Figure 1 (cartoon, rainbow, N blue to C red):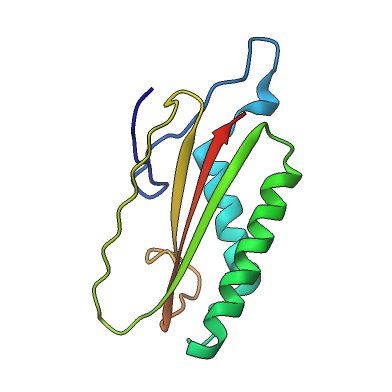
Figure 2 (cartoon, rainbow, N blue to C red):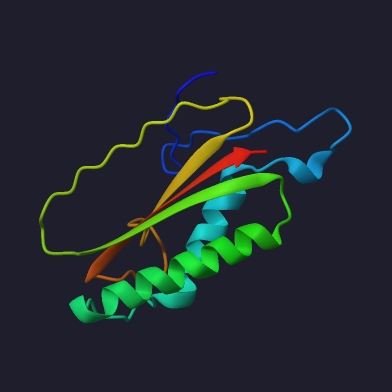
Length: 139
C-alpha cells in the first residue's frame, strides 16, 4: 500500500489496474476520463457567464456533486467514490489545499480539476473558481 496525491493538472496518471486478470478494460479508470467527466459536470451547472453569488454556492455545489456521483455510478466501474467540491469567489485571495490518502496505489486514486482552465481558448469565468476532487477506491 502507498500514499499518493495526483492531479489532472500536473499530468499525473491515475491509472488503476483491474480487479483481476479476467476483468478486462472496462474496470480501468484513466485520469483523463475522470477529469473530462468532472469538467463536463461543472460546466453543466456553472456557465462561463455565471456571476458568483454567495447565496447560490450551496445549490451549485449540491447540483455538481449529485450529478458527478450519478455519472460516476453510471459508468458501472467497480469503485467507491469520494467527491468534494469547492466554489470560491475570484477576488485575489489565496487558497491552499492538500489531500493525503493511504490506499492501494495500484487500484485506487484521485483526480483534482480546477475550473475554469486558465489556458482555455473558450470564454473563461472571471468571477469564481470551482475545484472538484474525485477519489476512487476499488472494491
